[in-house]
Every structure is written in structure tokens, then in C-alpha cells.
Length: 279
Image (cartoon, rainbow, N blue to C red; front, side, top):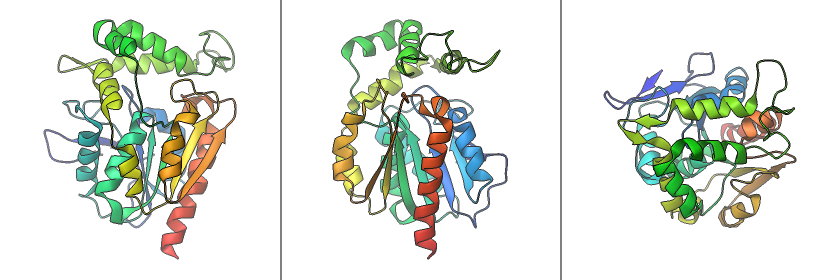
């Protein structure tokens, strides 16, 4: 389905079921230069276990209209604007990497509707080295390859090794790279450079999380070399009700590397925070 008014509509995958406004709703936000498909297992599971689901493509990503937006604040405000069209009152905002920062900003605009926020593979500040930022602008193909390797734990980063290739014709690492390549340019702009610059510049994380009265879940991969778990400490300490799930032997691409671990953490949290409101 599409949210918002043309020509700036946002695509939302509903998990294979029509959106039921009577149910609590899980809203999934992807990371830099990706789309809703990174959440396919987790979003589909929740859609078939008591929740409405909106797995969004951010503006200028996937099936959503462009242009890409320049800042985390703009992205969060656009998501909140789209969500206000719907009569949904028990939202669980779930974001990965850049999407976790966007979830914080969107929650600030939708406070009265948000039952909980889940931040996966998060860090604040989400700094990007000057060398990598330059590569995203000047040599994006090489930057994508580097990021794709760093996003996976060391045991599967080799492109032909198990468990990265759990079966014939299936490769976690290559599929992630191909997804990034499909979303490389929008309206002549390098999406990766835009997204990484937005993450690097974002300074509102502590203020945003302090403004949230709802519980916040942190899902952290212990083998994450993109957003090291220690860099989530400031957000965890600033949250009024912070809950932490650490996934062993899991890298930054946690939804693909450890889909069941992520699903369990999100499902338990979503049921907990929405049941508390219903009660």
C-alpha cells in the first residue's frame, strides 16, 4: 500500500495481510540504502500473529517516491506525517541502523500513539569516518562492497563460506550487496552518500530518547562491527525504560544473520508494550 499524497508517497509492505486498524501496528524502518525487504521474516511473522504491519521504504528508497531526504530529522518527520493519515493508536516503531535514528525522530512526533520503540543495531552518535564518507561520494561501488563485508560477522563475511551460503543459490552476503546496488542512485544522487552523511550529522539522539515516555528495546549484535554495542550505551542510559537484548555471534545485518533471534526479541517486546496499554 501507499501512504501520503502524490507525488511523495511512501510504500508500505503489510506482511501479506490487509492492515487492520483495530490491531496494534508494528512499523519497520530499514537502514541506509536498503528497503523494506530486509525485514521480510520479522514483518511477516508479526502480521500473522496479532499485529498490523507497515514495513516502509524510506523516501527515495525501494518503491517509495523520491527525492531522498537530507537529514534524519526530515526522514522522521516525513514518516510521522504519513502515519498520521491512519487511525492507528498502538504503534511499535522498529528501526535498524539509520532506521533506528529515524524511529527516534518519528516517535517524537507521534508520542501519544507510540507504545514502544525498538532500536536494532543502533549507535549514537552514528559517526562515519571521513574516508568512508568520501568513498560513498567518489567511489560508491567500492564503498558498498566494503560496507557489505563489514555488515556481516567475520565467520560469514567471506562471500562463499557457510553459514553465509546456507544452501545452493542462497547467499546472505551477496543478496545484501545486490539490494544496495539496486538503490544506488535516485534523481542523480548517490543514496549511500546521502544516507551516511545524514547518520554522521545527526545530533538529536539523546534529546529524542529522553522525550519518550514509552519503553525502548535495544537489540544489539555482539559481533557488530558497524555499530559496536558499546556505542549504544549513551542511548540506553538516557532511556526512561530501556531494555536490552544482546544477540551472540551476530553482526550488523542481524535480520538475515540471526532472523529468529531478532524475531523473538521484537515479538516479545511488541506483545509486552501493547498488552500493557490494552490493560
